[in-house]
Every structure is written in C-alpha cells, then in structure tokens.
Amino acid sequence: MNRSQEDKLNYLLKKFIADSDNYKNIEIPNNITDKKRILRSLMNIRMPKKLSEEVLKVQDEYLSTCAKEKGIVKLADIPIIKDNLSIWQGDITRLEVDAIVNAANSQMLGCFLPMHTCIDNQIHTFAGVQLREECYNQMNKLREKYGRDYVQATAIPMITDAYNLPAKKVIHIVGPIVANGLNSELEKNLEDCYINTLNICLENDIKSLAFCCISTGEFHFPNKRAAEIAIKAVSEWSLRHPNLMERIIFNVFKDEDRRYYEELL
View 1 (cartoon, rainbow, N blue to C red):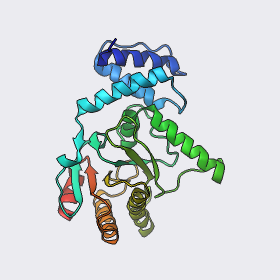
View 2 (tube, rainbow, N blue to C red; view 1 turned 60 degrees about the vertical axis):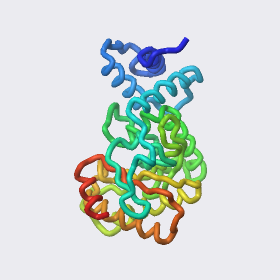
View 3 (spheres, rainbow, N blue to C red; view 1 turned 45 degrees about the vertical axis):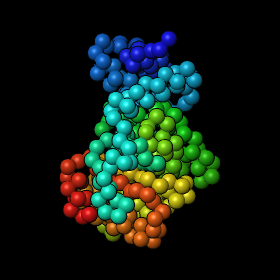
View 4 (cartoon, rainbow, N blue to C red; view 1 turned 180 degrees about the horizontal axis):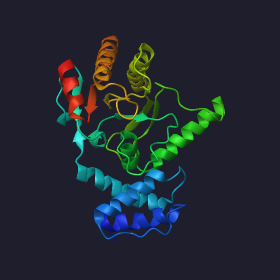
C-alpha cells in the first residue's frame, strides 16, 4: 500500500522517537508543521548508527518527496554570469549539481543542535541519516591513521554521497574561524578552502559545483572580504585549469552576499 507523505511522517516520528535515548515519551502533536520540526530535531540529535532498512526506505521516500516539494533547481535553470561562473541565491539543498559544498565543523558529523539554521544542519537533515554515518565512518578511518583525537583540519575537504539531496555528492570543508579579528593566515586558509575543494573535484570527475559562503556564518568571517577571496581563488584556479569545470556556482543565502558577489563579478 502506498503511504501518503503525512503517513510517512507519522511513521518516521514513531520510529525515531523509539530509536532515541532521551525522548521516548515525547507526545506527537497533531499539527503537521510541529511534526516536521520534531522529526528534524530527532534527526539532528541522532548519533551515527545503523537504521533498519525498512525505516531507511521510508525516510528516503519521504525526503525525496520533500526535495520535490521544495523545488529542484537544475543547472540549466541557473544563468552564467561570467565564463563558467554563476551566482544563485537560495537553499543549496535544492541544487541538482554534481556536488555542493558544506561548511562543516572539525568533527565532520554535522550540526547536532535541533533545528539550527546553519547550512551544515540543513544539508544533513535533507540528505538523511546516512550522511552522518558515512562521515563518522570516514573519520574513524582517519583516526585509525592519525590517532583517536584526530579532528579535520581547516581547508582539508572530505567528499561523501549526497543521498536524498538532488546533488550527487557533498564536499565537506572546515573553514577558518575568525575569533580575534582577521589576519593574513585566516585569509590564506579561506583561499585554500576554495582551491582544495576544486582540486578534489578534479580527482572525482565533478564538473558542476556549488560553493556556499564558507566561514561567513557561525565562523564570523567578514562577508565582503570572504566574497573577494572566493572569487579571486576560483578565478585564478580556473585560469590554471581551463575548461575542466563546466560550472562553478556561488550559492548565497543573504541579500548582502548576493550584492557583494554581483558587484565583484
């Protein structure tokens, strides 16, 4: 029997509540919006571990429909501004491209804060719980190599599948944190984020890529300077590697960032 989207939501709520350690007695509300908020929150706080194939199947069906409801944006829908560069404003999880960039933290497991507005939370939510599990497995392998206290260094990308997102892959990268003012080292770190991400695209035959505004959110990198560094790094890399990327998209969410990128391009 085919379940409706609401039936899938109710089913997943029951399963994720039963799977949780601290919220087994939470009451399921009647309001659809509240139900969605609780499911997302439970997904956000869930530690990386296996989920039954039956529940995964329903989760994947549910998230696939969510993606269609939000509206999938194809590469052909995004105009070219200059050379192979584009600016697109909106939710990066809507983009049907070879890879999107996630502004990750050094644990590389996504955001555990329920309903947080960061891009890391958004990407992990709509990719599904498999994304956190894959990141966890990759980090475990790195810890076997470098020690159990290993955390991902700034500007070193990690590539994963995108699961239920329209994109094929997610490239996770830790940007520099601006705590006590900007300096040349932090600027170089941000530049390396863009260059190293593009380099890993070459290694994985990725032809279309959407960058988020790395480090400008929770990591407090000044937005205008970040845009200047991003465009310079990407433009110079493209000159060194002509015709190897079909499209590079600067994905912005805020009007402020869109304005900076439009002025610079």
